[in-house]
Length: 309
Ligand code: SF4
Ligand code: ZN
Ligand code: ZN
Image (cartoon, rainbow, N blue to C red):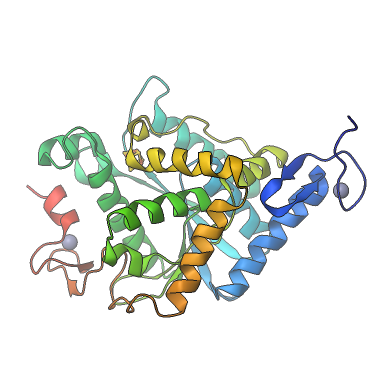
């Protein structure tokens, strides 16, 4: 069997994307990936040239690729790394911080680092144990803290935009979970762009239509060193469960994930859901008296409850 050829230059293909019926060599793939990102930024009106962007960086392939692409496109994008204090055999948090730091240093980019234990006196697993929320998994508390820290950093730093590197696999899994539970609040708010409101900047997901293997291919072909280990607490999570189901569907029907997600966005635009009231992804319309961020609670927000004595 002859090797698959790039559809643009006849060189040997580095990647074959069944869902797009497209195979490309390294050079054309890297160019395609950057072009696609720019198309999504324009299509969903994510941000303008002169706006300042803060990228949430975890040290993994998705977020470092996103930062790299925004940098190559000439946007003003700083990075934000949150050290969660998660230890494991591989020293997950400190190791991933190192990847983020090296990435920034190599390109002369600005990386802000927030260390949760230094700020609150406790690591994420410690905060989770103390509150007893989420039983054996610290992810609920982790999400609350990350959201708070990012919102705060964006506002204090004067960034108009907060960019996260959620990919299609993340979005489709989240959508499937929320659909099975008919979680209307989350369904109303799941979008490539969440407009700014009181207490939070605009939130955007430029990679929401890339398959996970596409972002991985970009990082590898661009020679970006990244942390390959997943957070040890993600093992056995609902999100991974839904990702596996979607991967099985995708094998027999390439394009299933993309159809599912884009179909949802179209249905939303067509008025299937009543628009969400203002508030960020937590949906809050009140402002927390402790920290000033949006919350659904009439008293202290979840972050303040989790971190205060
Ligand atoms: Fe946080 Fe859970 Fe994700 Fe780990 S898996 S980073 S604890 S949300
Ligand atoms: Zn080519
Ligand atoms: Zn608060």
